[in-house]
Length: 289
Figure 1 (tube, rainbow, N blue to C red):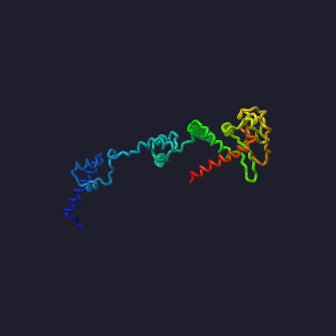
Figure 2 (spheres, rainbow, N blue to C red; figure 1 turned 90 degrees about the vertical axis):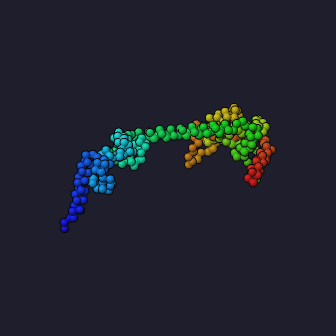
Figure 3 (tube, helix red, strand yellow; figure 1 turned 30 degrees about the vertical axis):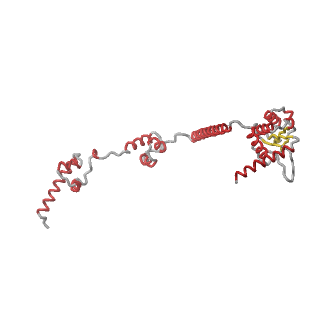
């Protein structure tokens, strides 16, 4: 079937315009420049005229990540890991992986032994920082105590004795102050409390309680120094028999056993301590409602 003259003319005009548009496109013109040159203001027609012809490079909008990609590849070639690239460029790990996945994997920077050493150093730095933090917290808490009043020491001593001292039972009355502890600070506090409530120092007896396998003479010298008495004042030590099936952790030069502080003729005083403790408990229960 023959084409009508009108349709043939339009087809010829389109092909003529397309030939011009393609030529202009290949010369490096943008769509806007082609539109102005050919006076074609219909965007759909303009796109049909240059269909299949790539836009010139200068018209392409630059990719904001192109520079990061090149930096990532440079870092990878220098031996950096994904984590290091991510930290250096502030990009995501997935982007870093995508940009450099065709590049060879860098050789390990450290031997297994070196990595272990670095881990130990890092762990020690962490532990040292934690120790400093705890020491600072303890120093701040110690400062909160301030000056200890007689009443505060009195109440602390009563509670300390009832927690660590010998107590009578209904079936076994032992009305005598006997205190045992392995902490020199606790012993100092207890002795200061005895002074506060007027216990004659001549009535106090000291005895070391320790495992038979320990250095007993060294322990006696240690506790004599803590209490400020001569070693000869200490009573014969009480030795704990060692069970070979038990694995003891309280060994070494820092192990001094326990000190027993025994106050003679203290039945009346023991009953007063029991009463003082009862008073503290009564007040505590009242606070609980």
